[in-house]
Image (tube, rainbow, N blue to C red; front, side, top):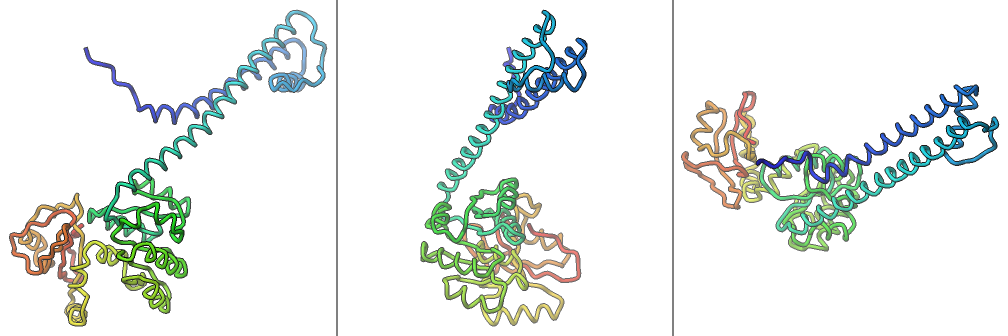
Length: 350
């Protein structure tokens, strides 16, 4: 005999019932007020007097009676209104308290669950700020299979991050206690991408004070901010007007490969030379759902019809292959250094 499957989890039933109870309570009160008013109107009262008297009776205000309550019929109507109205108000008050209590419990459990998840993290990345760059950075780190947590003070952006399913902690990233709460002493990198240079400098100072070995990538808007961030302890400074969120993810995910692509004057000169030839040198992260995950380098280049050439591979484990053979298999989370031909449609390795 098959067991009947219960519809919905206990959490979903609890979260939905307060709303249903509130709506049901309002409908019940409305029905009582309407029915009682109609009964008084049938006994010769005006609609205005009937409605007013029912309201003050249901809400137990108890002002003077507008008309004498004489006769069994009027007394029965009045007693029924008092009893039914009191029951409705009691139910509505209980539903309202339940609604507030359930919301508080859910928030408390959500915070506790998130704290437990963060406490289990080690060698992770902390993203300070879930603005435009923070969102792109989170997507890139997800594609690179890197564990991370987002720090966001703004309620709306915090809710957006939670809705995306990202581990998110609400708080001021410049507060050392908040940084400790997200495991900065166990983290391997921190990216502060708040759209405020002063805040990024202060966050960098706080983070460096808590973890001397932390890799700190900071966002800087004004040209004069770069030196301040470096002096504050940042390992690298990214200027969004010149370099996108993909570059920040490369510095975090593939530090060895990033050094290979632009860590020397020779490589920068090579990059300029390639661009004059209509070519680009870049690092791409292979997402878990990419059709290229599990493919060989030769297959990738063959499918690209000569528009993509793989020159290096940075394994998710940290190993760097600077001259990978054609039969090298690309795995999800790898960083692939490619030369692409600009101006042509190329397959996206992500």
